[in-house]
Image 1 (tube, rainbow, N blue to C red):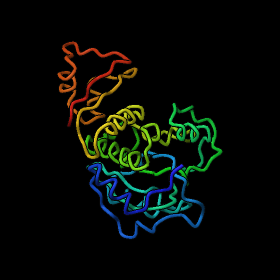
Image 2: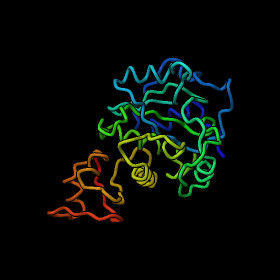
Image 3: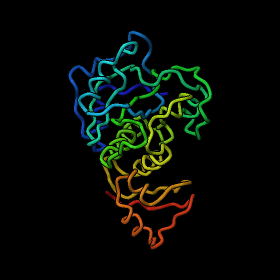
Length: 252
């Protein structure tokens, strides 16, 4: 159980981790606290926005839309890696999800498959909307993936959580698919590697190969040249990798 970070401490944690932060007007008091509790905090939830254009995305997440008032998250992570803070407190982002998933997050153990929606997640998760169409084709630039990693690590570091406290919306609520286009397991690996270093550090990390992974795909997701990954791991033609193999990922 953790008390949510005060606004100043949240900003300080993000900037210490090397996040480029833009504080939107009024973000410190923009919340849904009148509709329910904010806290205790248990984890970080990552979403994609199904929008394009940073200003449009920020506006929608700040103001919400018919039937779902803003803020729709605590911050927007743009494609260039800039993080726009738009709310502090309860936000309409998580909705109802599986209480068994929440218990796994609290215990920092492997997540069960989300099978029911019996628990309100809005009091318990920091929510980050990432600018992406969510169609599986819209790219995830390296700068954006790096910012997602840093934001997640900053909050985990500030609360003393492990990387298992970072989940995707698709892991929380049955039927959700976000974030689509990168694996949450890979993100948690990178967050864990970052947490082993000092705040803001950008040294090398590791990645465990999953089924269907390729060097080019891993490089695209991590924002690192696949050729550099191959060199780092002494992989030569025909550049074959295997599920379960641990790769060293060179610094960006």
